[in-house]
Image (tube, rainbow, N blue to C red; front, side, top):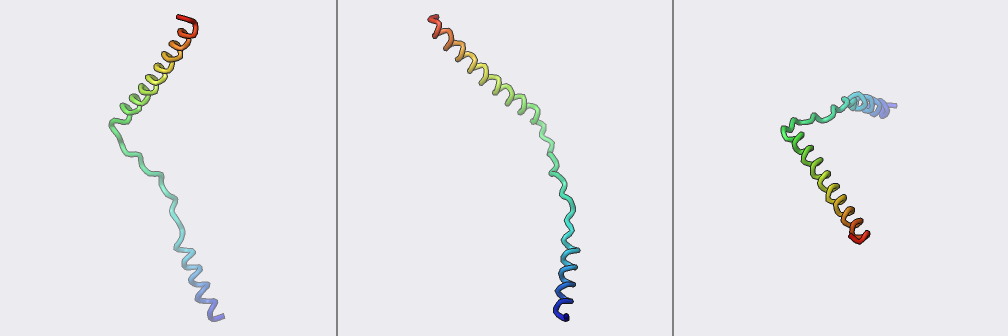
Length: 66
């Protein structure tokens, strides 16, 4: 019984110390270029789509003998 008392005391003390605080999500830092970068990415995506559409149209015209 004498050995159990210090072990139980340690378990209770360690259990009380391990109470974690809920973590806050990391704060998003202000980026002044964020909107410009998003617009540029959108424009690049649109450019790729337009190039693919032009290739598809060219392929259709060639298949029709034009």
